[in-house]
Length: 314
Image (tube, rainbow, N blue to C red):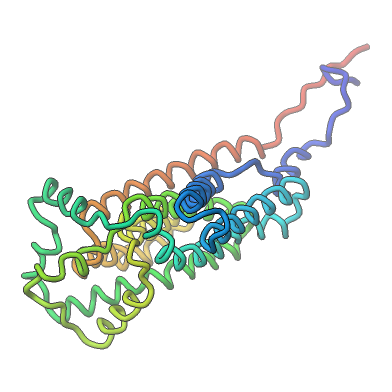
């Protein structure tokens, strides 16, 4: 019995095993997040030199990222694959804080006036100004609770998918850090402070609440890097996780649907985002969901064992 091309066959399923061990090509999120890091590094080198702390910081992250990708491609062990994926949550936290100092170097000034103009074009005025007549301590407390839920929601979702199989975690990370890569690029190209700072003098009704309102405001004050407005990653990330869950884990979609809707409204009510930020956040989420769906389809086609043709010769 011979094969149609007279070559020795690999055992059925061996291709699936090779893919399953993690010998993936460069993944979409690695392209988008890598492009953000590389472009930011080049801009920093041009602005303050190759040996500046900011330039060396981004160069170190780019080098570590490339090293992990190469090790995963050459090795394929599960530990290498998980390390390759987990690089991005670590890089996210390091980069987000560093942007407060780095972004003003490569983009002095803010674009709040441009975003306010976009809101006026869309709805006549910045929506937060229009909503200030609706403010009430109970609503402010409720929306502060929803807004602060973003952080445990993302963290618990990351742990949840990490504890599932490697393929599910890969799909989760692929979409999540495609969003962060493009979103951070938006922060670096269009830094803005948001209505609560840039338009503070235009609000005539203060946001009053109780201890959750105070807690949330303090977290934002301490945690914001002052460029994290366009696009709204609160909306992009939460909607991405929500609708990925709808496809993969429907019970989680039902559990988090109402809190996510409250979170989206809170970004405007609490005056942290312009309407255009929110719209672009949802568009970014939709792109990431499409990307994960396309990648999952291609990955599934590769992994399915294919019938092996044989020719029988007398």
